[in-house]
Amino acid sequence: MSLLSEVLTGGITGGTSIQFAAQGESISERGGVVNLGTEGSMLCGALAAYAIASKTGHPWFGAMAGAIAGGLLAFVHAYFVLSRKANQLATGLVVLFLGLGLTSLFGVDYVQALAPSFRSTAIPLLSRIPFIGAIAFKQDMLVYLSYVLMPLSYWIIFRSRWGVLLRAAGERSEVLTAHGHGVISIQYIAVVVGGMLAGLGGAHLSIAYTNSWFENMVQGRGFVAVAVVMFAARQPFKVAAGSYLFGAALALSPALQSRGYGINQYALDAVPYVVTIVVLIALGRRQSNQIPEGLSKVFEASIAG
Image 1 (cartoon, rainbow, N blue to C red):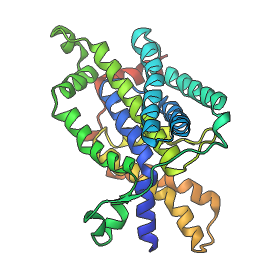
Image 2 (cartoon, one colour):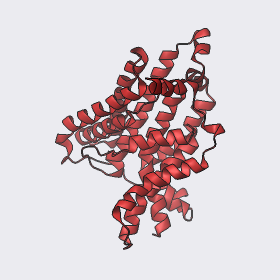
Image 3 (cartoon, helix red, strand yellow):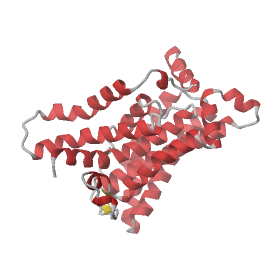
Image 4 (cartoon, rainbow, N blue to C red):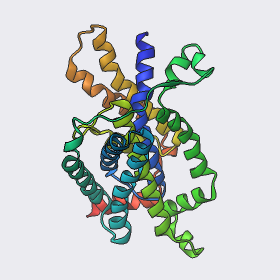
């Protein structure tokens, strides 16, 4: 396999967990709620998926458990910021540390445990397409699910009736209230769905990508997902591109090392973060990066506080 093929394949595999989390955060932010606890939802999803897959012997049960666990932690965030009117940014960080503490406490028994994982499955015909087939269509089932998630997220946000309500909740919540719609209930759904997708991203990390569980295994991917969402202007396809870009940057280091390139390891570790931010900023357009009015109020309130 060439260096380019290896990096691109690794980009899809490594970026899938971020894409799930980022698509979920896009939905949450479209509703006017920032969830910095995305990292915590990914951690809870990773542990729940690995634990349930280990107990049941079925990775799909693990994936479902991961989504549920991520959604439950996101519900905690939603309760405090929507029902108790707590600061969104501060609450997100608290929820993150809650997720980190819970997974550190309950994950000890699963560090050495074995669990079934999703294996690469070639899609007939598509996997035979020159160059692209081996990269995109010889992946695991959660990767294929993430392919479907891209257009599905776009349709939900921009073409469905609920998407109209969601965007109105983030832009003009008073209009929804005037027409008799419950803004809070829509935002609750958006945050919990976002957490479930983040949990599914964590599940991919533990039972498809690394095939293991260890403490704090997400290692900042939740924050990367939030950053990707903001730089990609909450556009589903741009979000996916940014996620895969980060995954490709992650894959670059081991690919170069396996070929004997003598590059400073610390510099290679910084590459994914630097490349993702620089490219997303370069490609972003100011007009399309205007954040929803509801999010503007969140940041303004945090600065004023």
